[in-house]
Length: 389
Image 1 (cartoon, rainbow, N blue to C red):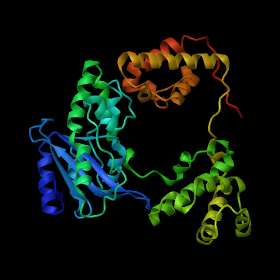
Image 2 (image 1 turned 120 degrees about the vertical axis):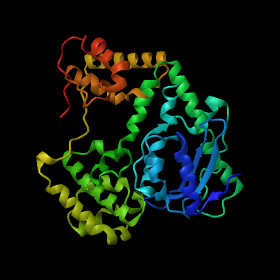
Image 3 (image 1 turned 45 degrees about the vertical axis):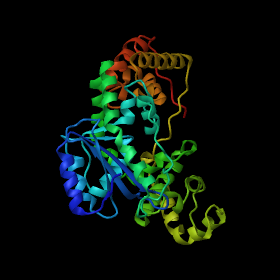
Image 4 (image 1 turned 90 degrees about the vertical axis):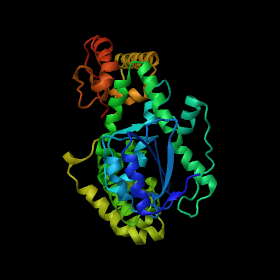
C-alpha cells in the first residue's frame, strides 16, 4: 500500500523518475461541492521504469501539502504520454494548479471509441470490458482533503491509475487491428489544444443555459450580460454558479427585463438576500443587454424547416454514418453528433472545413468525403431548407 508523497523533496524525486519514462498514468481526487473551483486533494501517478504495463508502480501525491507547480514540466513534456480517463476535467484542474498546459495526452475514454466500445464509457465499465476487472467505487464521494486517508481511500485512488497502462496498450492494439491507429492518434493530438484547459470567456457562458432557445435576440443579449456577470461573481467569490443565482432565474430576468429595483423586487423570483447583494448588478446587466445595438445582438438558436428532401437526406446520412462506424468498430457518437450531420446536410455543396468537423482530418477520410460525394451532392440540386424567422 502506497504512502502519500507529502514533502517537496519526495515529490521532486518522484517527478524526475516519471520524466525518464514514456508513459505516465495520471488521475486526481478532489472535493467540488461548495466552491466554484475544485479543491485538489490527491494526485495519482503510475509509471514503469521499463515501460512494462505489468510492472507499474503507483504513487499518491498529497496535493494539500506540496507545491503542485513542480508537476508542470511533466505535464508539458511532449516525450512523455500522459494517460488519463476522461482527461479534460482532470487536466483543466491540474493546469490551474501548475499554470502549465498539458501536452501529449492519451484519453482512454476517447480511445475506447476506436476500439469497438462507447466513447462515453466509464473507467469502471472500460476495465470490465477489457480485462473483466471491476473496481470498487464506494469512495466516489469521499472527503479527499481529510487526513489521514483510510486504507480504503488509498486503495480506491491507486486503482484509478493501476490499470491505465494496460488499458492504453489494449486500446492501441485494437485500433491497430482495425487499421485506424493513425486516426486514434490524430484525435488524441486535438487534446494538445490549450483551449480545452482555459477558463471560458464569461460572455460565452450563456450558450450553456438550457431553455435559451425560446428567447428573442434581445432577451439573449440580456441573458448574455446576466450570465457573464454571474460567472465573474462566482469566480471572484469562489462559489458555485447556482449559489449566486440559478439558471432559471437568469432566464426569467432576461424575459422580464426589470429596470428599477422596485420592479425587480416585485418579480419575487429572487430572495431578499440576493436582492440586497446583487440587485444593482442585475439591473446593470439588464441595462447593458438593452443597450446593445440590433446588429450586435446574438443570433437565436437556428430552427430549420425540414422539407421532405432535407429529411430524407438526413436519414440517409445518419444511416450511412452508423453503418460505416459499425463496420470499422468506431463509436458513431465520436465521429459526429446528430446536429453536426444535420448541419452538413443543410449546407451541402456550401459546406466548408472551417465550419464542419466531418470535412476535416480523419473524419473526412473515414466518412465525410463519402457523405459529400454519394449522399449529399448526388441529390437533386435544390436550395437548402429555409430558416424559420
